Image (cartoon, rainbow over all chains, first blue to last red):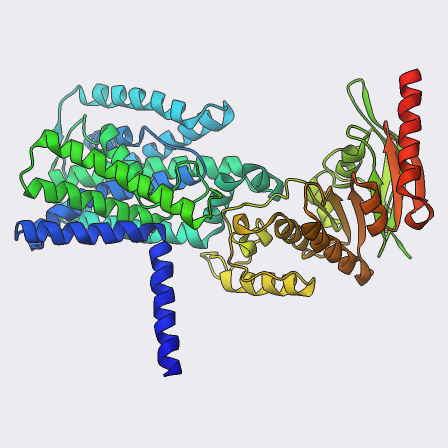
Amino acid sequence: MVAEGAARSSFARRAHSFLLRPEASVIVVSVALVAYFELANRNFITNANLQTLSQFVAAPVIIACGEIMLLICREIDLSVGQVFALAPFLMENVNDIGVPEPLAIVAALLVCALIGLVIGLITIKLSIPSFITTLGMLFLITGLTLTISRGYPANTSGGPLLTGIMGTWAYSEILWALAIVAIMHVVLRHTRWGLHTIAIGGNIVAAAEAGIAINRIKIGNFVLTSTLGGLTGLLEAFRVGSIDPLAGGSNIMFLGVASGVIGGTAIAGGTGTIVGGLVGGIMLGVMQDGFTLQGINAFTFDIIIGAAILIAMAANIHLARLRGGGAR
Amino acid sequence: MTEAIRAEGLVKTFGNVVALNGVSLSVARGEMLGILGDNGAGKSTLIKILTGYHRPDAGQVYVDGKPVNFASVDDARAHGIECVYQDLALVNGLSIYHNMFLKRELLWGGPLKLLNHREMRRRAAAALAEIGIAVASVDLEVGALSGGQRQAIAVARAVSTNARILLLDEPLAAMGAREARLIIDLVERLKSRGDIAIAMIAHNYAQTLEICDRVILVQHGEITFESPAGATSAEELLEIVRREYRAARAG
């Protein structure tokens, strides 16, 4: 009897500590939404729809992985959606001059990393808030993409194996997203890089006094975010089979940031989880996909999504305040 | 008692301002020195020279009797000098054990260099237990602790690196009686180990005389008074400060 009581209290304790996690409320809401959409029109939990859902989820989640790292160390990248659009054109241009497609992909990602490096250096060396740096880069890169593409869409090339891995197989994009989530979760929770990123956002003076290389870590996270943005753009381009100079943009960037914040990452820095970003991205995806299935008018749709993001963020901020005993 | 750290004739100027004008002091192992004085008297400059943050314009610092010239804070640390600043340098959102190992993290072997959370937890708990600090768990976030507990964690972190010279910058400032008692007890336990020299900047004369073995009074960059704690009183110290104040006004 005692053991049973202990087991029960241990279960209750686990349930309690799960519910206190920032991701928990989002998971609960997501499950409720899935149940609602499945009851409302019997088509939600079908292979075809899960495939669609995974496509809604994958891109914002990969973007979120970068933005979460930046938000935690009190930076942001508004231009990641423009890098998303630029990357496929870089790849095609490099491919056009005779470089094999896999190498062209690597080259495109290297240029994206370089863009992140430039953003980081401008932000750090010139002491410009990253909000401003990346706002400038947002317009600059859009112009660059339009110039390179002359404003026309293009088609992706590459053999079936490559295009399959990069996006045309049913679940390849979400598998990329899950792999990146797994890697970034380990980076954030189990490496010095992640720990120092949190320390910088939590108390930059303490981080400096401890001897943490603040600039190196911030710049590194800008490079990471731009590279992930480029990779997401490539994956989407391969999946769709065509490249649009106006793809991604601020929409995908905000979905990435929203996924992170809904999942419990603090805009003010210092706290956040990669898993939260995945969960937040799933919730946004379920809503987008579910309301689309419901046939809701596109205008109403944006109102619902916007309100849902506000509610989720407000709920998380206030739950965090309760957890922190009002300290934060 | 053997001398741990000694400074001779330290001079430091910032532009036209003479922050230190020939200050000499020494602290022995197992001894606790109180550094008193008004704001702007040069106490912080003194501490910052000893921690390698500032380089003196003239004068020499000795550790264990050997002359040392610190190029950086890390350099001073390598000589066993640790300082707990007023801001404590703790990250509220991180756990106690992460804070205690910040920038000195323990890693698993192997190419991935992953954090060894288990060993850091174990060693942090052992270090806290050794100096008698009670916390429910080293997994607690530092932000959830009281001011006194946070100060205790900062001191524990400083001494867990085998510090032999511990500098405390106003450890009791803005602390309630019970919180202050926690820190006083902790510092006295460290002192009784006999292997650490402690110097503490403070404002409260009575409290400093109670805790410290010896006190010095720093005024406009010079040591104007020095005495064993038992041979002076808060009144005497206050009178010296008043006399100086009147002389400054008359001059």
